[in-house]
View 1 (cartoon, one colour):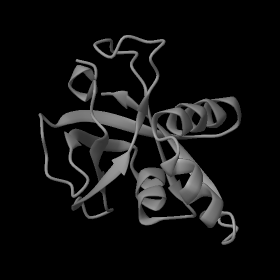
View 2 (cartoon, rainbow, N blue to C red):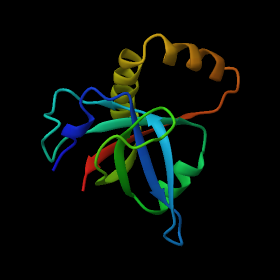
View 3 (cartoon, rainbow, N blue to C red):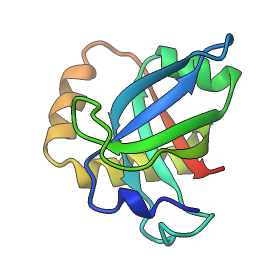
Length: 130
């Protein structure tokens, strides 16, 4: 179990599910909480999105997701893992954004600067092994 296959990867393919069960796959940036072993069932990956995206709506309806390491275009580079996503706020969201900022410096900061003009909120997900 766990997320050992994500070590050293830049992107993950996040599959969320519509109400009818159809999967929607999206390549996204992610950061792992390195204070927890990625092989562990307690492993955590953080993902964020801008605004109230389709991902947010689908995860609110169904926290079951699948994840796989991928390239920036979504080409899967490893095995799919069953997982569950949780929308987090407060300290957990701040921790996720801190890890993402560190991993994707300076690109995330540049995107964040331009996104600040749109005033859309950011939503952070914590992804756990199923």
